Length: 452
Ligand code: NGQ
Ligand code: ZN
Image: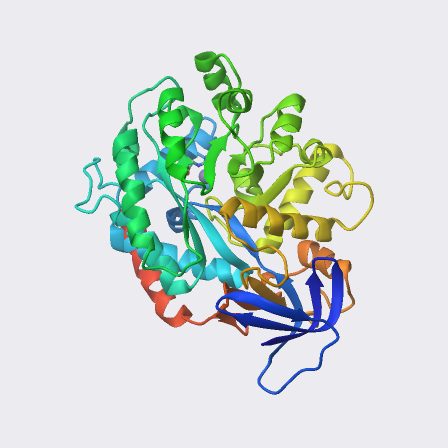
């Protein structure tokens, strides 16, 4: 039982709310209740967000790619460094890094994560004895931390648009569709040892890393689970796909795939107005990763066009260069203000930006992860976060303004308690297994950086 002084319910704010959690789900929500002895008492209770896009291992290279090299640095020069970094990663390091990343996500207020997982093989490309070895490591990290996992094994068959061969670090990613099918099956077998809220979807990495025929053969492997794909992140990618397929990436997806509510196009940055409106109307969830998109120089997403067309969206931390839910929210809105020279851009009509972004990202994140979550209602998974409304950054605020304070003024430390499918993993602002997980991470990251 959780007793909250204030809680964000589907139809608005309520006071003195008693929430009953059974078997990982919200069993009942009673506003205007009285606390009982034994209740976990919190101030502000919110549905916790899902983090819909992560490459966990990239956390370990945070701070290593911010030095300007000769010429001009770009997404593509960053990617070279990233490929070199991952080429030394061991399965044990993969697990230790992912565990720290999921711990940090939980402490930041996320209850679940979509792990877009593409490092499958040994350096040089030979498969591990267990084809899904590294998927199993990701799942072990999720189990250690208690985060809700939507695992997304990635199909990555080509080095670039037009079926170019894989090269260098990419050799660790490669599968044809047949072996990919076995890998997904292997990952699903490992997932049977995880909690029931675990999902295994699929992720064709990007149009440039697959082909029209391969994509058509891979899609049925989703079996109704989420399908994620990187799309239109960089202008060069749009140009390469246009030259190869005669259509821009989003245009091509709309014309040649059944893209809809179970799809999550990641980034969707460089779209025409027509692509924006049509993709939004397809029901797919735009997977926005504001901090990474700023860090990599991707450019801003067309927020006003997407919202006007009624598009769903959620947040992802992608490269994990910094894991902060509050900073994702404000970076998303600020990217729009800086481009449009306006304030309060990401809200339709009139109203609170923080409340709109938070509620929509909660619903969109849950949809993209195939999780019955995203609102504080009976029957939903108990993905919950309690924040400290007495923190100086929030103390004068109430109702939707609390969410404006969270998005624009608060440090991450306002997050006090987090439950993922009822698992109470963050208590008093601290993950329950931090003392065990963080030392293993430090050892892994120091060994990796010393070797580089
Ligand atoms: C990724 N990152 O999958 O981590 C990619 C780079 C690639 C972003 N798209 C790898 N931000 O494109 O092959
Ligand atoms: Zn990504």
